[in-house]
Length: 360
Image 1 (cartoon, helix red, strand yellow):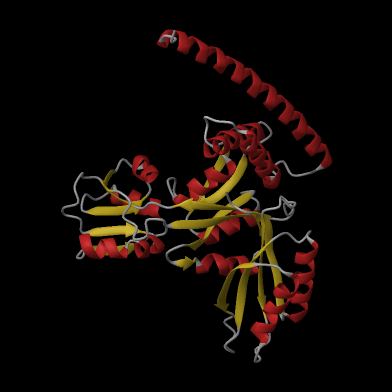
Image 2 (cartoon, helix red, strand yellow):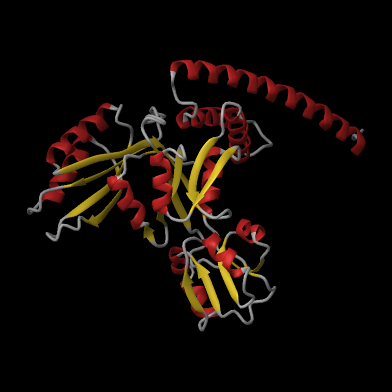
């Protein structure tokens, strides 16, 4: 005989109490771990350890919860446990409601101290000066390519990369009115305007496109004028009381943005190997024939895969370039270590930007 709704609700209430008791037990154990780490002077937050915990739970998961849900639930559990010591201070491109904030919450969980910044430069300054422990920045978009300012800042910054997040980005047209008619100005970050240009050409060909510091800032400004609209997330629309007048207007339906987490090495050392890692570096080679080809030889020789290769002008006036490279693997692996050593010997400039677990 099937159970009644009241009977099922009684059972759910009982399970919830069991879960609460178990979560508090876990929090108490995590607090003890935090005390040991404090005495040892080691980092509270270890992304590779949390990635391993989530991967292990997903492997053991027999459903009906989906593995993605398991990851989200446990990330929040671990975030809440970490916050018992002190919530991480995380800087990101603000104001509240940006995709960068969403990336920060996806990585750290919601139990963080928010430090919204007006620019990528401010994010780097906050994490370098110590007003934030970590910074989150966008580095690459599947439609528009690399975020050049982020690469330039990574080149000279003492910060290193300790994690990454890949976010499916859905841009929405937001305004205070409920219809698309009468929009004179569309405000958004330059990358978002570029990612939606075909849609804008078709549906709002005569509207001015005005670049602002972030999509959430565009949403904030759109709330001040009924003839203005912003391109941003639904979270930004809710934050500033705007209506979504058109959903998912990005030209690429699978538009993704890659974000990285940066901090000082003294805040957190490089994560240990997880088996699914990326090593990012920036190099330059002497300006001579075959130099770029020679730079790639150590990777082939030692069987190390390159997953990204970007160039940026060195601004020396000599047509020299910096090359940003992502390699598959961790420097603790012999093949990766050997490839990096050989590569360094060929370079006029060599800097490891970070080694970190790959995003899910």
